[in-house]
Length: 262
Image 1: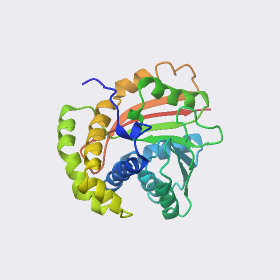
Image 2: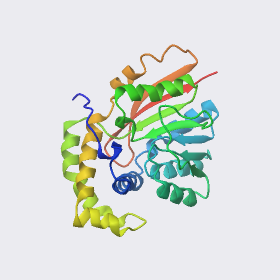
Image 3: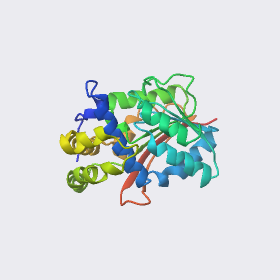
Image 4: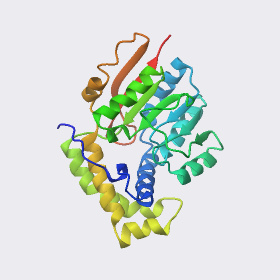
């Protein structure tokens, strides 16, 4: 099926920050309990070794939970200790602070908005975007890649969503059930999260809609290839596109990685 550029509630400027945090917190909870991106960690290490980076600059971080796992996996399993920086257009500062404390300062954050299409020059490191690139329409997606390409910065785009009819059917069934059953398990515990989930069920509706839209907006490997079609002029910059199986779930992880070579 073709990619469709629908809206997600959490992308809307007027969407209340309280609701946005509820949704991003739940999304991060899902990513963390399934350790969805663990299979991609060796690939991240490979690129960071090639480029000499020892810091990840995470763009569109949401609540940032998966980055804590990736940082731990790189340090413990891959023996490649790194630091990381969380950034977002709508920074969830409360979640960022919590992750920074848990990581004992190995993961820092920026509390001001950061534009992924124009990353400040002083934010050096391996740029990453996890489960967020699909939010951007093609024109803005190209700008994100162009910014990294022009500034000779390494960038990694990682998605676990996919445009398959069966996946959409499963998400339509499972998304509301997941948020209804798992909301009490999310920490820190918040009464407001329970209220907007069970008393006035804004969260289940928004999460289910955004989940379905995330899948239909996901870029396939062929779509990603078209986005970088105009960025092949420099032989000192390499692009890699591929997919790999997640370790705990029967899903494919799609990645686009670009990095400079000397």
